[in-house]
Amino acid sequence: MSTRVVLPKWGMGIEEGTVTRWLKSVGEKVEKGEPLVEIETAKATQEVESPVSGILVELLLAEGETAAVNSEIAVID
View 1 (cartoon, rainbow, N blue to C red):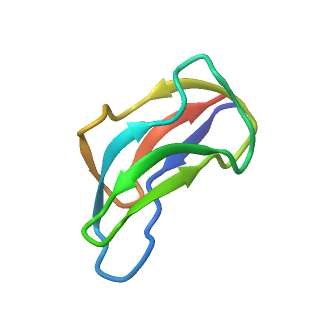
View 2 (cartoon, rainbow, N blue to C red):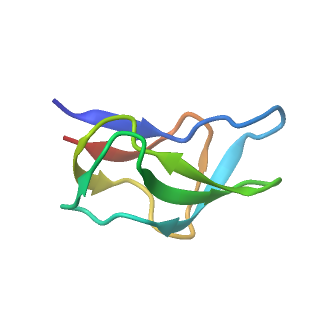
View 3 (tube, rainbow, N blue to C red):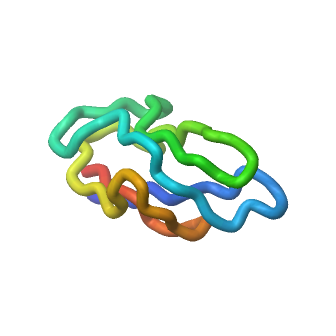
């Protein structure tokens, strides 16, 4: 079963974030709670953690790309 990783909303006024660095690559095993990616917002750079354990099968944003809060950014099987 696939799980979509979404860009969380960390605070009021945060509407988008930019991928600064993926910490995992497609095909790698990830554990629930493990950092997947660094996201830069207008206020800070933060890590998005994996919501589940599994294999990272797809990155939906490249480094340097920006997405709206609650957008899907990766897929874990």
